Amino acid sequence: MKLDEMRPRRRITTEAIEQARLKALRALEVLDSSPELEFTDLVVEAARSVGGGVGIISLVDADRIWIKAHSGLKVSTMPRAGAFCDVTIRSDGPLVVCDSAVDPRFVSPQDEAERPAIRAYLGQPLVLSCGARIGALSVIDQAPRQWTEDDVAAIGRFARVAARLLEARRDEREYRRALETVAELNLQNDQAETAFAAMGEGVILQDRDSVILHYNASAARLLGLSEDALLGRSSMDPSWSLVDEDGAPLGVDQQPSMVCLRTGQPVLGFVLGVNLPEGGRRWLSINSLPVFRGDEETPFRTVTTFADITETRRQAQALQAALEEARRANQAKSDFLANVSHELRTPLNGIISMAGAIARTPLDARQREMIDLIVSSGTSLEQIVSDLLDISKIEAGEVQVEAAPFHLGELVRAVTGLFGSRAADKGLEYSVDVPAVAERMLLGDSLKIRQILSNLVSNAVKFTTRGTVSIDLSVEESATAGVFDLAIAVRDSGVGIAPEHQAAVFDRFQQADLSTTRRFGGTGLGLAISRALAERMGGTITLASAPGYGSTFTLGLSLPG
Ligand code: ADP
Image (cartoon, rainbow, N blue to C red; front, top):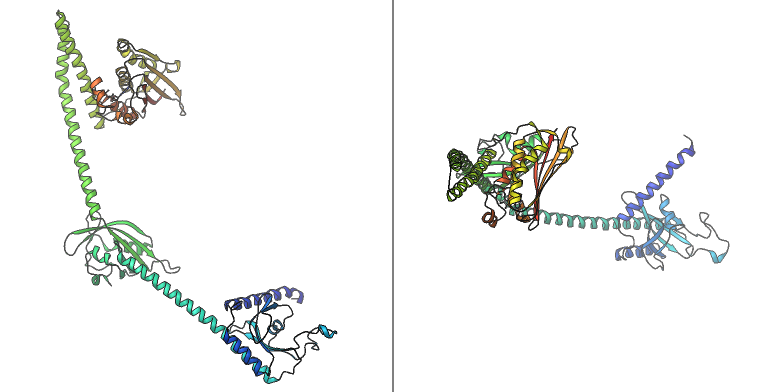
């Protein structure tokens, strides 16, 4: 390799050394510090030992000279370039200048007036234990001087003492800081220990053999053991009596801390029961977390925390039992309702058909009125009984959805035709709009659609005393080819339903409010049945209503064409 190619590397190395030197200097934390008597004593003694002059301890910063101590100088800092002490730290030994005005190492001005103020200089580098040359201890004089070997040696000794003193100051500071850190750590540790001891949750720390190393008072209390009994005990101790969530004995391998040790994964929210030494069982929810050391693959410890969930679990079980009991009672009621409705239907049919037969015989006006009342009461009773049967079937999940071809336009006209005269009797405007696109065959359960529509139109007429009832049909081809989206909207200008009652009208036996029952009668089953049937067919019933303005119930269905 040629010399030229080596040059850049050497420069980098010099720079690196300078950086390391500055780092060592800064670590002393001495630059710009206050004067210290010990350093001043040193320079005074140094100057005296060589028989006069000014003693100086100067430190070479990146681009300035900073003076730590002197025995009589006006300046405390000066530029680094050209300073004697910078020259001192660049060579291996001391810098000895007897007369700078004639010394060939320095520029010698011809003019007397330009001669340097410092004519004599004796400087020894301040070398730290790491080898860094951070400044110099020197003696200067305004007159030329002949330095002796003794002078050079003496200043060398003073420089060594100064360097050691600087290091001693630094070490002392570091030691003090370390002490403060230890005190702070101790405090933090004490706080953590206090929190640990005061925690309501149990905490145990186990080593890689599952031996308990550390635990808090709650751990002992929750496990029903004395604190002494816990220390040193391992998960493998045969005297543990643990059960899993279902009450079956829990094997050692299944214990959360063992699983955590084996897999290196946290185990969270694990529920187990502890059979307490004094009898009884305590349920715990456990989290076990692995602790790794360095890059090791297997955990070196586990931290397990556990909370008492006995009471929560008891409440959950009681709630479950109560829910089960309520479900059973509800089932019994539904069965009863279904049986009673079924048993009512036969005699009711007998009454209605016999009353119908009597109606066809010659009767006087009073008798006809009474028979008509029997027939109309019987018919509404039959409707109620059939609603009850429907709801029982829906609840028992016995409703089947058929798919058969039917004509949509005809179905809508047939159903709405049933209520036209009732609307007319009430003086309502009644309109049915079936667009041309609805004149088509679709595949679906026409009976159920009929039942829903009858119910919606019947309600609209029932709850409207003046104005209009209109049935609008919209049919669109859906995104799925061959399927049609229907929306059958039944609109009325009747009493309307308050927003807070709108969700409840779809619940069984629910009416918008008690005055409705008094005014219009009914059981509150129609909409519950309608929505359940619509949902069984994959459809929806939605409601938009404002009290006093009317309601719109819309049946939405998607059916293949
Ligand atoms: P029922 O009509 O037998 O009471 P429904 O389930 O059909 O039972 O209706 C439940 C309640 O919803 C009704 O009692 C009534 O308060 C309210 N409701 C239903 N339809 C309408 C309507 N078109 N306008 C106003 N209120 C209605």
